[in-house]
Structure formats: structure tokens, C-alpha cells
Length: 166
Image (cartoon, rainbow, N blue to C red):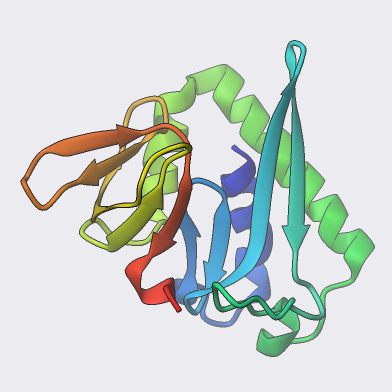
């Protein structure tokens, strides 16, 4: 829900939204560079959502390319952007409550990097796994197709598109 709300907020600000893609589990890419990220934490029976968007400038990271929305047009006003994001988030929550998670997962897949994209996954406490993006499960977990043809379901981990690797 958070990723779709973020995507829907950023998309109208771009003249070429085809360059805007979601990357599992928590990134928004613009032209292959990270423009935003989402953090989720469970607190008792609630989920705390943190969203960071590079509106004016992007941090210089050694492990991935980054960009800011200001490179693609006028720098969005922070307060107007936050208000739009809150409205899109409320709309996505309502869609989830009304229709369940399956339509959200399918919509997420339509705006993500394409199936077959090469991925490097670092699951917590495990060695790196390489494979290709095979979509999401019905609950939103990553389906990773291994070179053997087997499929591995990933519930958590750091994921990089092969094209993002330094």
C-alpha cells in the first residue's frame, strides 16, 4: 500500500513516468536510481511507516545510484507533496480494506521492474542469492527464480537489481 501510494504521488510530477519503477521490498526507482525508500516497523498491533523522498537533493551513496525529483522538473513543495502522499495513502488503505491485498499486489507488479530482471538478494543471516524476478506471492513476498529453475520465496532482505550493483 505504501509503495503504491508513493508511486501514485510521484508519477504525476514526471513528464516520463515510464522511468518510474517499484523495487521490492521498499524502493522507488527513477531512471534506475533510488529516488525514495520506505521503512516499516511493527509496534504492538500497529505498523509504523516511514517514507523518505529525495525532493531537492539526493544523498551520495557508494552502493547505489540515487537521484532527486528536482532533476526531472521543478522541486516539489514539501508540504504539498506530503499532503498528496497522505491522500494517496488513505486511498490505498481504503482499497485494501474494501478489496483485500490481491488487487494491490497485482497493481504493484504492473509498476515494478519487469519479470526476468536479474536480482541479488541478501536475506538476513544468509549468503547472497542471485536469481531473476518472478513476481510476488499473493501476500506480497518476492518470488525469486534461481538458475536451477527452482523458485525461492523471499520474505525479507536487501535486494538490488543487477544493474544497480556498483
